[in-house]
Image: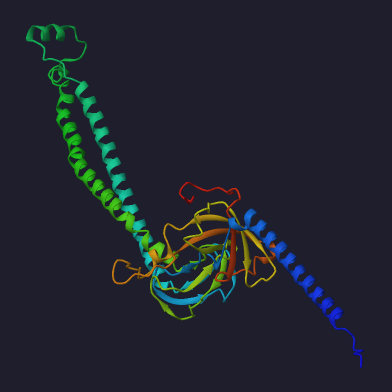
Length: 370
C-alpha cells in the first residue's frame, strides 16, 4: 500500500531560510552598530573623559562675632536671601557704648589740655617778643656823655634857660640808661618760664600720640556689636537664638553664595593626562534629569585628594596595594537664569570632558595642567 502523507521538507527549508535571514540581519545590524560605535570612538569617544564623582560647591562663609555679649536681635530667618552689608544679628552693646563715650570724653579732655598748653606757649613767646622789643628800644636811647667844665660854662652862657634849671640839666639825660636794667629783667622773666612751658607742651603731645592708637578701640567694639552679611547669598545653618550669650568666634550662621556655584569633579589619575584648563565640559545634574549644562575646566588641584586627607596614606610601610588616585578638578558652570535658585551646593553630577577642544577662558600659567 502506497504512503500518501505530505513531504515535510519544503516547510522546514522555509523556516530554516527565515532563521538564516534573521541571523544575517542581526549580524549585519551588529556589524553596522559596531562600525558606527568604532567610528564614533575613533573620532570622538577616545577623547572623552567622564566621571560621576562630581559635586556642586560654593564658597560658603561662616558668620561669627568679634566681641562677646548677649544676642539682642536676630534679624534673619532660615534660608533667607541677604545682600552684602545687611544686618544679621545685633548684640547687647550698652557696655561698649559706655566705654566709647568715656573714650570720647577722654579724647576731648586731652585735646583741650594740649590746646591750652600750646596757647600758653604762644602767649609766652609773644611776651618774650614784646619784652625784647622794649629792651631793644631802651638800649637805643643811650645817654649823652657828661660835658667838661669849660664846655659846661660855654653852654650855660648861651643857654636861654634860667639859672635855677642849670644844676638839673646835666643829670636829666641818664634816666633812660637807668631804665635799661629793668627792661632786661622784664625780658628775662618770660624767657625763664618758656622752657618749662615748652617741655609741658611736648610731654602732653607725646602722651597724646602714644595713647591715641588705643583710643578708637572701644568705638570699634561698639560698631562690631552689629553683625552684617559679608557677601550676597542665602542664610543656612542658623544656630543663633535670641538671648544667647556668644563668645568671639562663635559660629552663628552661614551665608551660602548660591549665585557663585562651581563644580568639583574628581577624575582618576589615568584620565587627566590630556586635560587642560579651559576645555569644555558637559554636565548632567542628577536632580535635573534631561538637562545638560555647559562648563569649562578652571583649574587643577595641586595634589590628589589623599595628600590633603586628615590621615594621608603611608605606602612605604607594610604590604602595598596600588589604588588609583583621584585629582580634584574645578569647573566653571554656565547656569541658565531659570536654574539660579534650583542648583544648590552638594548636588551630585556627571561630568564629561572633551579633551580635543581648544581651551577657553582666562587662565594663568599656574592653572594649566601638564
